[in-house]
Image (cartoon, rainbow, N blue to C red; front, side, top):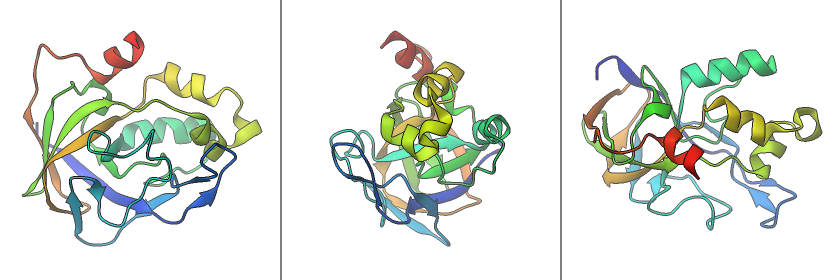
Length: 184
C-alpha cells in the first residue's frame, strides 16, 4: 500500500492520577521530536501504568488514524492532537480498523510491526475524554468502530514522523480487528 505515513510518534508525557484500580494512568501521550527507538516493548521512553491491560509484547504499540481522530474532533467539537487517544503512532492513509490480525507493516526503513488485536476502550479512557461530560463514551467509541489496533514489534529500529508505512503482509483469511472486537 502506498501513500500511508506516520504523522507522529508519541510517548507518555506524564503519569496522571486516575480513579481506577491502579491509581494512575499513562494515557497522556504527546509527540516526540526526531527519530525514536522502537523495541520489543514499544516506543522508547513510553510507559504503561496498567501493565495488566496495556503493554507487553502483544500490546507494545497502539496505532490510531488521523481520519478517525478528525471524525472524533468533529463529534466532540475540539482539537484532538496526536497522542490524545493514548496512541503511540498517529498514522494517515491507512485504514487501521480494516487491518487483519497478523498483518505486518514496515515503518520507515527498519521497524516492522504486526497487528495483534483491537483496542478495547475502558473507563480510564472515558475519564480522560471528559468523565461526566461524555457519558456513555465507551459505548459510543465502540459503536463507531474507530478503535485502532495494538501491534507487536517484529523488527526493532528507529522511526519518526513522516516515515512511509508499507503493508508487507496481509493474511486474507484472518479477521479484521473490527470483526474480532464485535465477535468478542
